[in-house]
Image 1 (spheres, rainbow over the protein chains, first blue to last red):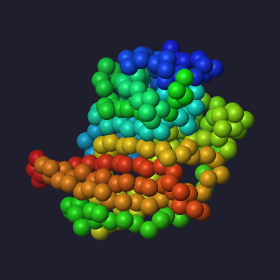
Image 2 (tube, one colour; image 1 turned 60 degrees about the vertical axis):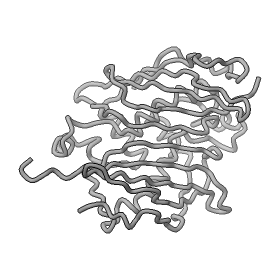
Image 3 (cartoon, each protein chain N blue to C red; image 1 turned 180 degrees about the vertical axis):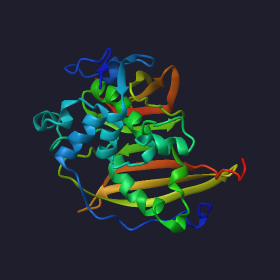
Length: 153
Length: 153
C-alpha cells in the first residue's frame, strides 16, 4: 500500500488554542488492491465474499469486488491519529457509507483523504475534524467526523 | 423472508470474553495503514500514557461484530446476509483499547425500520471490561437489507 501526503509532524502535537475552524490537518492518499482487502478481511473477521469473490459480488448485483466500508473508514482516520499525535485522542468517529469503492484486478483503487477543523469546543477540550474521503472524484464516505481530545494550550 | 420486527429493543446477555492481543492490534493497524508507533511499539504507547500498545480507532469493530453475529446469524431475525449493505458506523471511545484488555459486549437492537421494501437495522454494541464492567466503547452500526428482487424484474 502506498501512503503519502502532507502529513503532520508527529513531534509537535496540536493544541486547541492554536487552532481555528477551517484549518487543514493535511491530506493522505491510500492505495487499495485485492490483497489489501483480503488482509483486512483476516484482520477484522469480516469475511463477506463481496470483498474478495468477484463471482459472488457480481451475482448480488455489484459491479465487482468492493472494499469493506470499514476498511475505508479505518484508513481515513489514520490521518487524524497522526495529526493528533496519539490515536487514543480520537474519542468519537463516525461515517456514512455513501458509495462503494470498487477494487480492480489487476490494479489499485486510490482513496484520497483530507481533513479540516470543523469545530472547537474548549469546554470539553475537543476539536471536531471533518474528513472528505473520495475515490475517483466521488465521495465514498459522508458525515465523516472525528472528535479529538487535545490539550487546551 | 422479512426482517423480524419483534427483535427491536432486544438486549443480549454479555458475550464471552475477548482478549485484546498485541499482534492482533498490529495486524489490524497494518491492514488499514495505521502507521502511528503507539499501535506497534510498547515504549511509544507508554510514553503517551497508555499501559500497552493501543488499538486504532476503528478496531472496536472487531469486537462489536462478534456481538452483532448474535442477531445477524439468527435465522429467526430474518436478515439475509447476501442482501446486506453497511449504511453507517459510529465509535464512541470511553477509554482507549490496549493490548491485554479483557472485553465483553452487550448488544442492543435499537431500531428496525422499513422503507420501500428495504429494512434498516441499527444495533448498539456496548463494549465493557469483562472483569469490572467499566465502559470502553459504544459502537452503533446500521445495516440495510435490500429488497428481494421482484420475480421477473
